[in-house]
Length: 151
Image 1 (tube, rainbow, N blue to C red):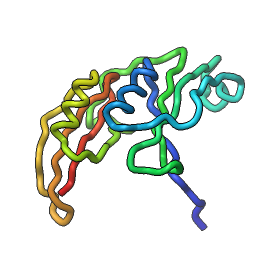
Image 2 (image 1 turned 180 degrees about the horizontal axis):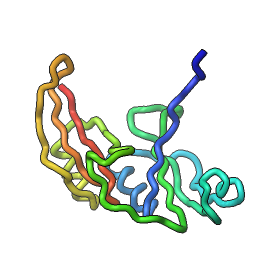
Image 3 (image 1 turned 90 degrees about the horizontal axis):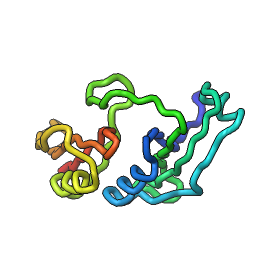
């Protein structure tokens, strides 16, 4: 018998969690959910396998869901390990995606709020699904954000 499962959140580790919270709130309408987190202790060291782990951040309610919907968890650790700029074909989690009313305007809002474009806006027909207008963008810390509109 399969276990019961409910998707609850995705975590983004940020250099500056407050800056990313502002970005996702202003551009995509995400709303803070619950208290700001300031966590440390033996339990966190054990869970993360880090020594003297300390993190701060908050959860953001994602647009289009009620109070019980999944969140985007944006945390910063005191000790960070930098990685190279993410690419669409890198193994692991690749991007977060938002359905938007207007891809062009959404990309403009991303850029105006400190993000950038990865590629170009394209429109393509996906057989059996519909027409997709889509672009990959970056948030201010380089994480990839897909902006899409289906018709």
